[in-house]
Image 1 (cartoon, one colour):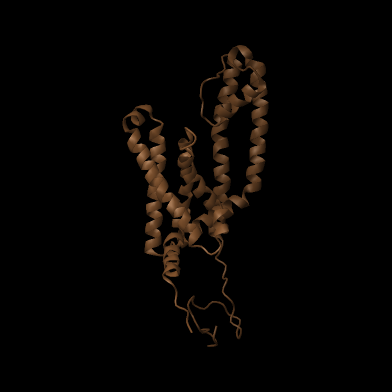
Image 2: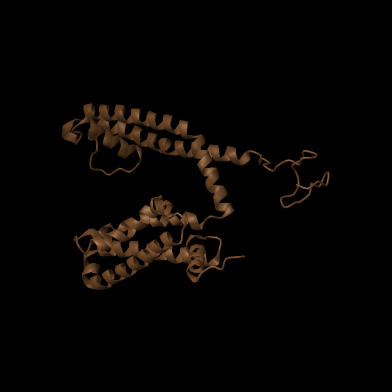
Length: 275
């Protein structure tokens, strides 16, 4: 005899579909609302650090922060209640981030200034990848991951090469410019080299001697080439993966061994045997 589900079981089932499901309209709507609240909460924490804005709207900011925290708390508890093995969620990456997102406001009751740590909620924006769980996005992310993995060795060698270059140039600049130009040590010279190679150019340290300026010009030009190399390596791997023919992973027909049948076929179109 079929067991009739209780109202509590039905509630858990429906809530689980809404909270954990991304294929349903209700699930996607819930995730979009959740992301909107996460963005709002991060914005509130940012505006709280603006002294003039916080002075004028401090009460409203605190009220909204508590309102969002209560919603996140209810969501966190519902996620635990509606899943079969709650410990898997509690100790998962998202579970820990969800807990850290609600703790700061409660801790602010006992410890002053801890509410600013609510900025950890920005990590919850990673749930965007869960919402974009569409075959097209999944395929693109897989291609990118495969390209990065394939070019990992080349990138490591390249970074090692850049590290050697920065140490050599930083040491040379320390000798050429000296402490009077701000190159007080070899690490300071390496710092300047990294800032120049990446074309950031803070300007807190700059060469003043003709030789130092010549080396700086060389480093600046070298920086443009260095920035382009990792991008070219990964792009080449992506292009290589795109050009690879798609592998047919269908199970061959047991009778004739062919696997070129249509995706939703129930019978082999060559020999007519059930698939």
